[in-house]
Amino acid sequence: MYNQMAKNEKEQQQPKQQQPSSPSKPVSSRPINITLPPRSFTETFLSSGPPGTSGFSPGPMTLLSGFFPGSDDCKSFSQLLSGTMASPNFKPTDDKSPAGDFSRPGKLSMVPPSPMFTMPLGLSPVALPDSSGFGLFSPEGFGMIHQQVLAQAAQANSNMHVQQAPAMSSTQFLTFINNPAAHQQQQMVGSVTDSRVTVQEPSDFPRSYKRSESSSLAVDKPTDDGYNWRKYGQKQVKGSEFPRSYYKCTLPICPVKKKVERSLDGQVTEIIYKGQHNHEPPRPDKRGNDTGRDKRQFKQSGGLRNSHPISKWKCQENGR
DNA sequence: AACCTTTGACCATTG
DNA sequence: GCAATGGTCAAAGGT
Ligand SMILES: [Zn+2]
Image (cartoon, rainbow, N blue to C red):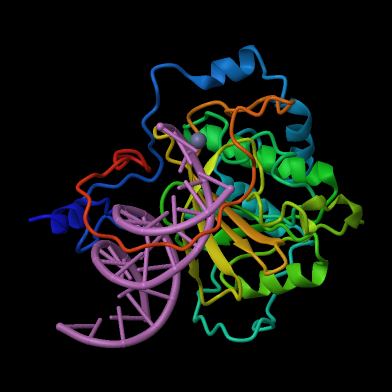
């Protein structure tokens, strides 16, 4: 009579939604469908173009086009990927288990239900205007985003990994493999992610790109991408030796979540964005304006949970 | 005071 | 149906 309901009700929107014939999944889930606010931010972006963000630049896109033969505009990203795979550069990493213990049967097949991007972040998310949220909700828009991301990556001259997940969960997952440490690790990751395709661009990647997240703000802030995040969980996944942290955009109306994997040193090994922000970045300018508090990290022990009949945001996600 | 992190337990999905 | 895994919740505690 107290908490059970709360727990039950919760939000049972986990992964999986492409299989309409899911047994215990009465909720109708949609692939890409977010509650779009009355007005489109797209306009805002196109119209004003925030000072902080670079906005939309057709430049990179074009570049991308060059990279991916067959990608016209915003077609299905699958196509794009296909094109990429067709590239001679594409090389599936067969070696697995450099990490050690991750005996994942994994499906090596490349299924294109949900695109997944992985790129060694020579450039931190900051560089990207908004990898996870441009305010575009349509699949087309999403494609665009991907392209942008790719473009950015390409522009950065960093090796980029295009990975495809077999069957992701909800909307989309943008994965950035931040690997300032070295390529070796990145390779490792690629291998670890058995079920994904890895596309490597042979480019001289100046390692000087790595930001100061090596030791300073590594643990402090989870990759500033211009948005505020609240950590709501941490787990140790088998595939990775490092714990994975789960973050949620602080905006209650924003469904965006992100999973960040950090090594003990604080190096971000993997960042997975899910969904897209339906709002502009809270802090376009980061001058001496410290509206928030200190960007210090908090650390304390957790507690026990008792009961709470409240379910904050459970209508968003990917289609209420 | 508001907000965020920590953390164990709960839950959902998959094999 | 159970076990394993991953994802989320929410109390407690810090900043
Ligand atoms: Zn957001």
